[in-house]
Amino acid sequence: MDFKSVILEFESCFPQIREYGENRVAWYAGKETKKEYEKIKAAGPYAYFYDFVNHYTVSLLSEKPLSTSLPKLFFFIERMAESDDCSVTDLLKVELLEHIRDQSYSIYQLALSLMGPKTCELEKTLDDYMGKPVPESFPQK
Picture (spheres, rainbow, N blue to C red):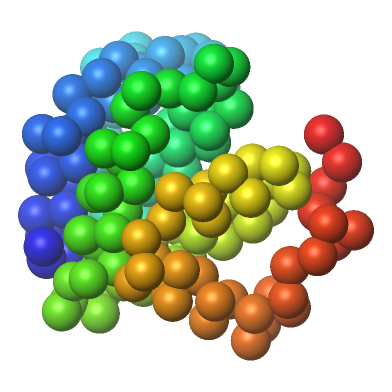
């Protein structure tokens, strides 16, 4: 997987992200959703992951009962972590793994339990600048 193809690969695996993204744009901006979705997508992977993928991931992690899409999502995330393109692993780290750490401890723990070995290894590097995760350091939700 490379940085230039990460959005298309994500949309290919998760076609529902378009509807999710359009609904999200309508919710927070009240703009014409199809155009705004495409505008954010055209801005590149960082904007796309920031506005759509990280929130989509947390919404799946928050579903009760658990979403059947989670294993497939974390398989995709593991593929990103395994990428030889450091831009892909940086994207994963900055836009998704940091965002997961900003959620409740229960969401973080669930995400950890679904992460593959490379993703866990990358997630651990967040300790260097975010500190070690302990239950008291997470927002109460």
